[in-house]
Image (tube, rainbow, N blue to C red; front, side):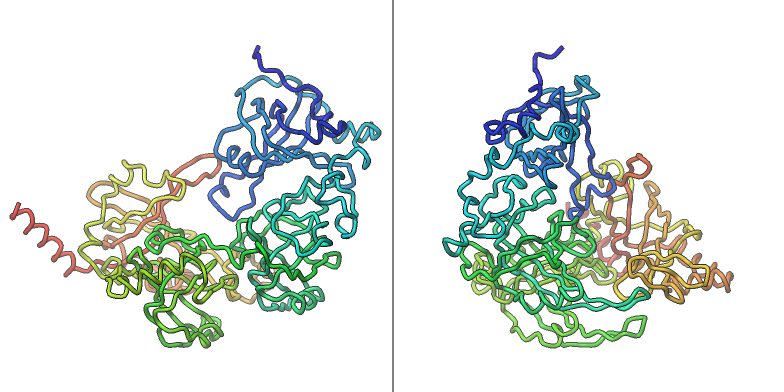
Length: 619
């Protein structure tokens, strides 16, 4: 029997005794239940973190929401049912008209692992207070009502029962004595467990109003991002509210926001890391704030250009660089016949790397910054077609000549030494490595056996490596899937009884799908064999036909289909491979996908071998 005793009945005391409510730290509890994140989503930085657990004091159990340091410890360790923890920093919260009780845990420490449950049938605290409402704290006993930041009832937010939320930590200074009565919360604090809050935040991004038309009708959508010193959060408004807030909100201005509805974030529509987003409905209150003190204009998490080579395709990054080249504007036509305006610029930084950034539509037409200017780009998408490049998306923001330390430092470097430097390009030409240095690219190859022996792919972000290998087998069953034919949507569609193809994401039915590759091939070199997956762009490059055409050939011209698929077998290729752990059916394995594929450049191969022979003879 362990010497560590649980704080019996302490969870009930937290919500029934004012002094304990006001000093909630130090309790020792047992983990009653956990609900960790789905392993398949654990690597996704944009996926909401499900750090909601149950804790027990031996008599009662209650929900605990892990935040900050506690959430990081929980995600990084193997906490399980029965573990004993000491809560070192926490806030009690009474939500939903005092019918729900939650302990918001900001930090904790593990006291004992794997202890047998002291009382598996302990009483759920919500149920206990439902049966004994007189024991719960009332408004007069609630210590939060004595907190200076929210005692003045001049603001509508402060007039609400203060016990519905933990004490707010200031996110920024207020504009006036009246404004100081507001319970100003930091954006990072927002969660559904607070129902009385106000944020003071800047509109860091406001998109154009989007309209849609489908079988259910039509509507409007407005996306904005709010920013304070603690982080950013996405907000959406629909239909009449979209029109209202489009007129009210100005990008770059600061506002007080309260009474917006919080809901789980949708990672597919945002590049922000906040697990929740705001819904600006009719109940929402937004007021201009004239004092912009302590509210940043933007927030960046910059990465150096030389690290983008190892970034996953379709991930988003923030970069700052010097414009080296501005290419002419040109026009592209999609397979659906829609025309797009495009312009490519090349930026460099002091890592001595360069990368192409694609600008689209009106930005591509209007772009007029001179070469040598500094640009900071937030939320730009990483593409791995033909090497690594960047592409501006709907939620990307380009800030010219930003007044931030990183920009000043970069400009000073470029004016003194960078202007005459040689840069390695992340664009990969056929048969050569970055910057066209084919011999350097060939020298970086490893064998399949070495990649397997080195356990490449076991790291958190995965690993990249390059091999020269021959394709010896191609799986011709299920080599492609039917995808939505609408622009900017690649979701799988399902055939309906009437012959149309249904996309749940777009809420539309289309006459035919746009087939996309998910091709599996076996490759081998002189050391071993490996199974690789090629997605659409890489498989098209390999086979020379798109997936829709190959599906047609398989159904209508099987001889031609066989000719296409067999034409690549036993041919050697340069393969840039990404290895990453994947969990499926509770089994963990390393999955290998092709980031880039090129035919061999025989002249480069001969030059490399000649150089190797010369070095060997000289040695």
